[in-house]
Image (cartoon, rainbow, N blue to C red):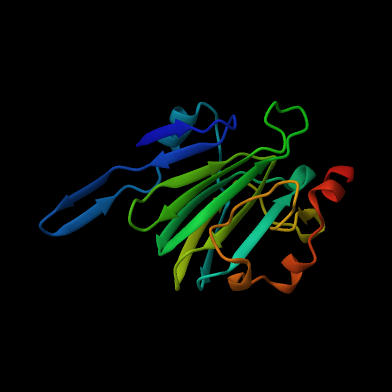
Amino acid sequence: MKVTETYLKGCFVIEPKLIKDNRGSFLLNYNKEEFNNKIGFDVDFVLENESVSEYGVVRGLHLQRGEYAQAKLVRVTRGKILDVVVDVRLNSNTFAKSFSIELSEYENRQLFIPRGFLHGFSVLEDNTIVNYKCDNYYNPKYEDGVIYNDLELNIDWNIKGTDVILSQKDKKLESFCEFKKN
């Protein structure tokens, strides 16, 4: 497994080793001990989610606050996404900075997102399946987020605005300015 830290401290690109031969391929997707050793701290995943989406869907930007904050390990098993994170850790020197990376079934890269980050993704191919492990349980009372097209964050989601598909909940997310006030 190759692990590369992004310019956002604690956020890592994970590249599991893929073994191919005449029978097909084998991928060791996750090994807790190796993963924790490579990133330099312990993460204990307790929940795994999966979404299936069509081209143009944007999910996010989301996070869980307080005692329900979540670190995530994101992987695409079919299709392709642009995965986006925004550092919202108040004492971080990269506060309000974003990082994005294409994750796909073709490259098997993963993104580890520590607690204290907004997270979202845009779907770049139909029938895309995204799996993500979380190190804490979901609690709707602690859910928060920022609208995907916030002007201050100015994120390029690699999708034309007219093609974007949002949930009703995501359409109501606040601006980054309002998010910072809370």
